[in-house]
Length: 372
Image (cartoon, rainbow, N blue to C red; front, side):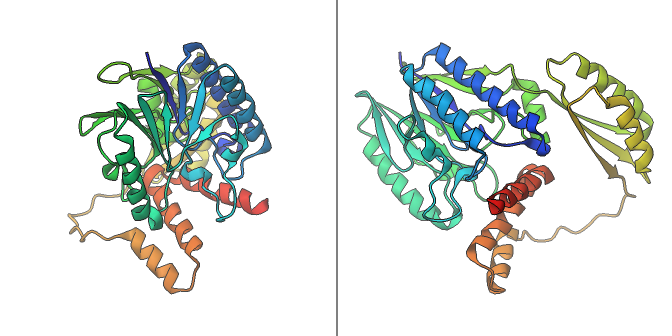
């Protein structure tokens, strides 16, 4: 039996909403992941990028990663990783934070490594758009070299959606595609081969709440011993619950009472996101009701008001516009540096992909890097 554990998007060091408790939640989920992997005894743990949330994570994040993964490696489980977009160094000569794992986890970006005589793992880091063509050329060569092995696994941090979709360009013919970047767990077929995103190990945005409630958060176990991979979903129990409620002002009090009752039944105090819908909403009474119903019953709550507008007539649809290219070209034409243009595009992508929360997260991360 050849058993592989596949994890990704762990984001050690991320303090969601600026809360220390959220940073600690991710350490706790990671510790549970490592202990579960140890009990399952796979031959290999693959980390498909974004082990860390930043190229310069907190010292505690570095220490926890080295301690927990070091113990796992000492127990006889081999570990391999690639680099995700959150870990990409901002300067060419900088080391990624995963360098702290030297001697513990094998970095396999743009490499083939063999596991025994029959299995090969090909690694692909997250690549910038400007480097994409060269990256795909190199990856094609690695895929060709890998064909002499009976079982082939591609470990990649690769977006699935939007203009940066890299999955459609990945070389075909691998036995299993161990992917990272998408935070919802997803298992699918890629031209007849098994492919999966293991998803993040904690709820990192409101966009992930529905996926967590349906299928959990955790990692995957893949049995490669047969003709076809057998994929088992492993969910973690230490996740801090989050709930999104949407209500009109008339229904707000009832919805909050239900949320408070749900909160009291959770192992950890949850995070509640409240969306108040309606016309001409007075924010002060809405906020007062939220505070009265949720105070002391949740770790944190967030709210937003969604104003309804009068219906308008049919609007003519404009031709599709490449907004990303326009942003980039405009900034470069105004004398901005390449890095500045990349940051602007990253902010746009963050908003389109996961909303304003991801934009806040990106900005706070960059500010933290500047302070260092």
